[in-house]
Length: 181
Image 1: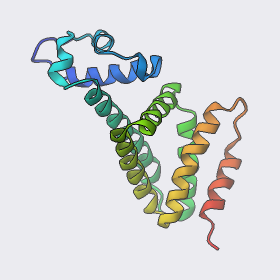
Image 2 (image 1 turned 120 degrees about the vertical axis):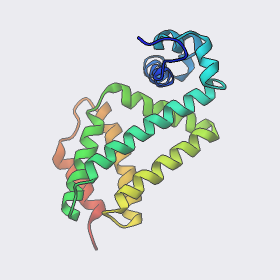
Image 3 (image 1 turned 45 degrees about the horizontal axis):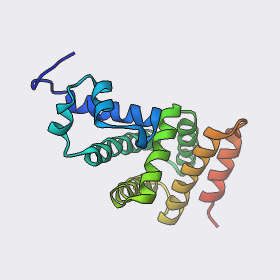
């Protein structure tokens, strides 16, 4: 492991450690000391790289949101037709709901912070705008907004359900929202 000031990955390790700890203990369970220990960095690195725990958490969650947007991009990029886009949204919902429990926890921790604190609300608003923009490449704006909510809701419900509905139910929900009157 690289150490000292020449360690170009130190900041990234700190951010990754913060997300890992949040997933294990929740936001209220993290501290500079725990994050530094998890990242394998001296405690002083925390204040060298971040002005405080809020800056660290906001940057960590921003990186997480960027990751989820990349998942959206990956699924939607190859959709050349509206039917392909519908199937891509179905795939996206199943990918998100079957992903690591860590991701489910991180999303909920972020939403809880966003419900209480403006910087995290602003982060979520930027994330939603980016997600909707990707959906708007395939669907009208109002439909994209509805699909974005469906993706969030069905992903959560599927992840927490003891007997999650299969793809046909997801596909039907996507088709209903994207149906042209």
